[in-house]
Image (cartoon, rainbow, N blue to C red):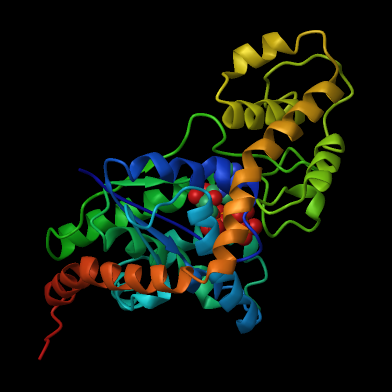
Length: 327
Ligand code: AQP
């Protein structure tokens, strides 16, 4: 039985990129592996926001995990800040990580260009992410493609710690899906779909209403050609629609390409929108039921206990290996 860990930030509302690239792939693991799924609320603090909004979003994200299929009887679901081992281990690992390697993280380069005004938390966040994973002795991490570099760092830090101090950490493997690992923005298919995009035309959220989903897909940016072909370089918009359609329907891209030969772009856009609507409908229903039931708080309280138990020993070993004395 493998240990599986993954997390999502409670900022904005999850979009179909988060779902198709990561969350959807969490679900099969819980049938056979020991899973820890986390709402990474400490990561959300790296970009300052309204505390009330963060409180609300954290609960809503936990409800979305369950609505999407995470079963709290099979997997441990918890808020990152409820297990203080994460913040503690992050400090220890920051004393192993190098300034230069954090400076090379592309996500920091994208979001942290104005170094005078960004928080130091945004700079050191990949170290927190590394210990999120390592504390649970994680074997496998299901994530989208944008997290590949952060996973590499987690592996490097684990190896360095094991060499420099003591063999404590398991080296985790990223699990990135073949299709859907990088869903692109509907308004700009050259860039990934992103919660923090400047316009809502970029993404479709998991809680979006049907009319709005259809409208956004109809307006999705494509090209001036007419051929339906999978070619992310030359035909980024069409290829993105095919990827989305493929993951939500389970049909392969070559089969879809064949099916849409000779049909117009409009056809593919409407069908993709409808397939997305069908996928999201049951998730939305379960989400609203859960939010009304008030069950989430109890689930998260139980998850926090299990998460603390799972990491207690590793954190203790880490401190001991580094020469910290415990009384
Ligand atoms: N466009 C995407 N396609 C496929 N997978 C994606 N992920 C994010 N965007 C896409 C995956 O979703 C998981 C949750 O990541 P997160 O909450 O930490 O957010 P993020 O990676 O920073 O990306 P977002 O959602 O677009 O937020 P912002 O705008 O704040 O950067 C991860 O597994 C990620 O790979």
